[in-house]
Length: 252
Ligand code: PGA
Image (cartoon, rainbow, N blue to C red; front, side, top):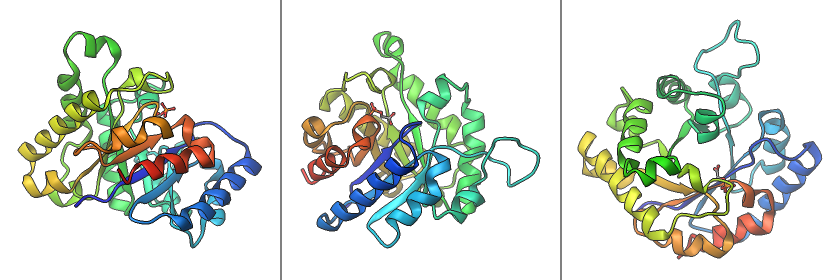
């Protein structure tokens, strides 16, 4: 049985005081939920402050990105060990904004996935198609390529610790959510890809989150699908009540 996992991706939002206040509020509200894993991924400059705000709570800490090298002359970058040092458990890798705005390739993401795993972080690896790719019937080709490229050289044992986030690019921050059927179709196909590459037990254990305009109003329908194991939430994760409303929806 896969345990639902709801993660908030705060992106480049909030300031220090509001990040801490939101984290404290979530830590408090999380006392009332059970049976679901929770994480928040603040901007890296606020990781330390947020870590203190959620210390001892049910909310785990995640980062939005990292660099694959261990240390050295890489101006502006942050290593996996540094994220661990701050108390991170998760790191989002290959988010579509990093792929499409910052030009990250599957090869670069793959190096990060290996470095994250080596350091003991659990990567949340994002995949998803553009609207033009969906409309031209290439959704699974694109996602399959991103999966194979981002996860090259990953063992079955490692795969079981990775979280996949299916985020159709056309649904991110647009208010245009995939229907539960559209999302479930891709999640099921992704699980088949995992099964073919690894085996049934790995495919059954990997959690696949859906991301793209998830809100309290649509969460229960999406999360009620058999192969949707949680959500990666952007905009709605910036308000405690909205985020916890989504968490409530994860119980079907
Ligand atoms: P959104 O973002 O919920 O604001 O659409 C999701 C994401 O980018 O992870």
